[in-house]
Length: 554
Image 1: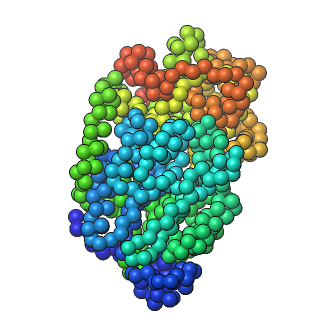
Image 2: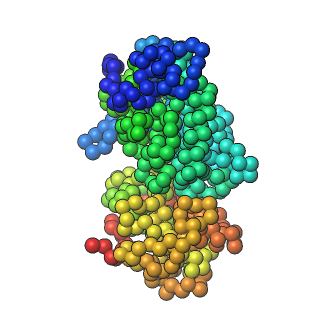
Image 3: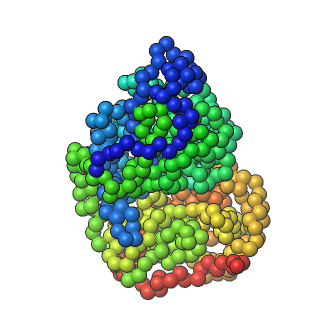
């Protein structure tokens, strides 16, 4: 593919106010920083990615699925722009180290190695960078040849930023561009609390003040262009979206975003906002060569460049992992539904039934006694299982987080509160990953009754239910009629027992009595398929089994 000059997508009065087209004095005045020597017209290409989630290997598109680039194509595109005489900055807006077995097997270190080989200059901290725990995050950060940026994540004990907040680059033209990083405040709730419990995520007005301080600081360092590299998105946490930040903060020329997996190229209040989607379906390029930014999404299939040395690194790691992951463990004659919406975040699905049953079956076997119930949050399941062979790769694609499986004792009241809170978004247009998939439990959810919020849960973006049982009616648990005063043994994950998503009631239970560790979630699925189901998913899972009855719909 021959790269052509891109079409400007925003007005020349925005971004860097026509730097290179205006007089030097006017351009410098518009940048609010007087400098001794005027910069020449910049020749800059910013190549950006976001939410790669381990999709480092190229996949061709089909009629019903989009293809994606290899990360080696990112490296090749970088080289091409350098050969055209441009300064090139390669940046990522977060969620790199988790999502596919290729990078999950090494807890993200292979993803960092791929980025190093590509020559990345910066990365924003995404919520999934925390998935492997504080120690692995620190290792990945140390092994990266580029900084992880986030200005709004503070260490609770000291009040100081946990990560570098910004980075300034001086181009060969003399133009200075400064980047600062932001991370979605929802990380406090959607990440395992044990991994983020010592951190504070600034939100709302504090988020805006933090961002404004970063802009002012970078302008004070003589930056002609100020860019935010954010993992924020516009699909959750009203008041904390990238467009909210742009609306409340003056002086952001470019906002490179991530988190919600959308494709975005638009001007918002004079700021260019861009996002590539996800999974390397696209590579983003923003070109600045005559003052006006020219954004483009390069779609998979439209560019065939490959950096051979980077591809060799990816292929070597992929071959090693494939030998471990591609052994066939069993089969399913029908689809196991792992879609988000409608799916595991909105209703009972056959995959949810299978996973929760796997938890319950494995826990009962390992504890050598009958456990009452199994619960997993819908957001822990990431893909469907297609009809056909099931390998370890497939199972780890369904449950890529390697969550630890435990047995915890909860009271009936705590279980009722947890289910009420987890179903709070059910029946709305904004479902959440907390929605429960259950085994050994039957309950009815009345979505016609509004969720009434009580006090906010500690260190969470979610509120407790003001009236547990208003929307949820539990019929039975462990084959017994439900009783709020009884105690039930539940097989679930440490994410839930740490109060992840909306499950603070389970944290209270775990704090009162230490849960019993069983193993990992994907190991439970594997054992259940191989031993419990004799390598074949039974016909009883062809459809959801009626454990969750949703009423009150139109």
